Amino acid sequence: MDIIRATDLVKTFRHAAAVDHISLRVSRQECFGILGPNGAGKTTTVKMIYCFFEPTSGKLEVLGEDARKNIRRVKEGIGVCPQENNLDPDLTVIENLRVFARYFDIVGARALSRCEELLRFVGLYGKRHSVIDELSGGMKRRLIIARSLVNSPRLLILDEPTTGLDPQARHQIWESIISLKKSGTTVLLTTHYMDEATHLCDRLVIMDKGKIVVEGSPKELIRQYAGSHVIEISPAGEAAGNYLKQKGLTFEKTPTHFFVYAQKGPEVFSDITLKFGESGCALRMANLEDVFLKLTGRELRE
Amino acid sequence: MMNISLRSMRVWQRNFDVYLVTWKVNFIPPLLEPLLYLFAFGIGLGQLVKDVPYEGAQVSYLRFIAPGLIATAVMNHGFFETTYSSFVRMYYQKTFDAMLSTPLTIEDVVMAEMIWGATKALFAGSIMFVVTLLFGLLSMPMALWIIPVAFLSGLTFSAMGMCFTAYVKNIEMFNFPVFLFITPMFLFSGVFFPLSSLPAWAQAVAWCLPLTFLVSSLRSIALGSFGMAVIWQILVLAALGFACVLISLSAMKKRLLK
Image (tube, rainbow over all chains, first blue to last red; front, side, top):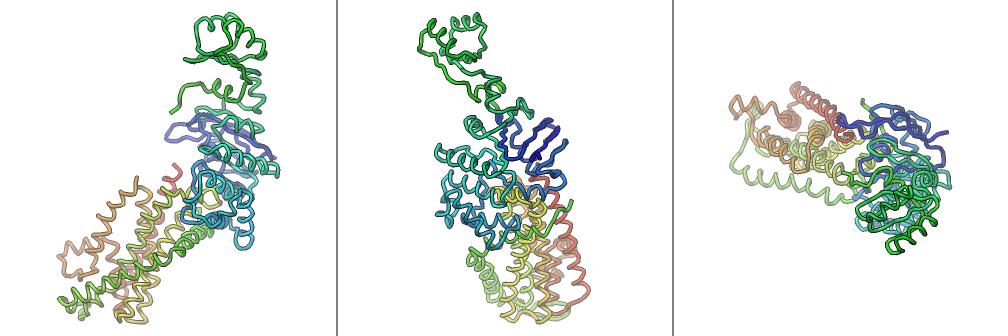
């Protein structure tokens, strides 16, 4: 069974389409990523999936239910970790979870044991009586993840879960996500971090200007759009440019760099370094960031 | 459109839990407030103003203003809860956004906030009720009707507050309804003097203010002169409250799901 099935989904705000005819399917126990520059429509898509926004048009089924009609039933099976920290500052750490569980009609001893279990899972049990303002950014994020799990969701939606965190906190959160996935939870993730998407996602889409540009597994996309290796050449001089053209290589030019996408990276690299010297030349594996920049362009958004 | 369920009481419970954590702080101002008023008006002004004509009889000034003070407490606590307090929860704390990722609907959340506002109005009105009762200013048992009326009219003022919350851009903008609406009502709804002492046109204006209806009905109840007029006044408040509930539900839905 598909956990999410969206067909021709559109969301328009004051006549501007934030999401413009997208279709996607997410199956059980998958980690599905939505990537894209700012304003691409990632969060709007996610908010339609957790029934915050009603789609302007198109069909949307989540957990086998119509997401326009059976809003409460859909939301009962979803956990949401929003982009903004919206923990309740009027309540302590454990009260945040207990009150949130009560919104799902989970009360009493069952709620308490679930909250304590989750606090242990995210390593905040020792902080259970702290107030929210005393927590670090990473702790707040972990508490939000714990909160999004109070209803034992079948679908977990993570909207930029690690933005602004230090590497330690990020890796801790990644580990939690991987262990949740193993236990059968389907994960929908939006992120700006390509390493995060590569590390966590089985499949992903890259969105731009409200549309899906490309869909596939991170490996497939890298192979298809960036090849196996990238050679970076700096400065982007005329002689090197002419050489790349003459050799018929695929490359991109920025004011400071050439980026050469090559299937046979080491060979091309030794040819280039023989001609232009090793300084200013670097050979590396192609990654998702190359794909992302190639498909959505290098100019700034917003 | 009216997607409200019993689950909305979970939002009310959240506010009540927070209220209990700081209950001492929450309890003291509504308790001191009536004492200050009674001291100022009873001992201060009461020396100058002896008796006030009411329904052909003379009543002491304190007995005259006591129901007005209960009405004022109900208005203030109901209105301020769904303006400043709800706005902080909605805008600064993003509490509503968090709630909306649970099976709660926007209508659940907004309705619960208004019922919570009515609850705060009921608390404040009840404290004022007890204090004025202890001063012997209410005629029992008729005066007990003040309690349910306080809750109902509390809902009316909460719903009016929520209508403003649905439209203001920032929290400073609440100064306008407070200055243009709440303060004039406090002064000109017959809390401190009989409306009959105003010129006819000013009386007509006063009878456009919701607080006038509440002051008048509570005064009749408190002084034991219950009649059809009271029923009508309460019905007007209920109708106004119902309209404001409908308006605020649809306006808040637009605001949050823009």
